[in-house]
Image: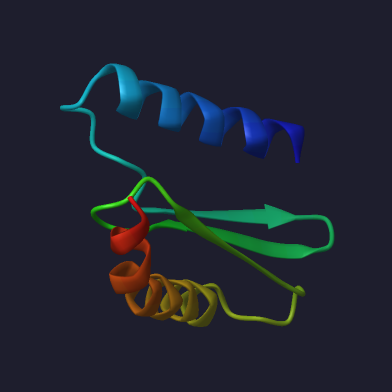
Amino acid sequence: MRLLKLFLYISLEKRLLHPDFTFLQSLILSCELGLAAIVGIHQTEFVVCLFADETCEIGMLKKKARALANALQGPLTMMD
């Protein structure tokens, strides 16, 4: 998880220092205990993180993470 935190910090730091940098769209990690999906929410600097056990299909996890990010986009753009 430390590597994940470091990656997200570097992504956010690049976004803040270099406005032309493309923000994280999606990242799927295979871990010992299952899968982790990190999806960026467009027009914000927020991300959605979901965790699933090893029986979950990667495509389904990514689709659910993207659907959640799309649902949260409107409310989170009001916060920015």
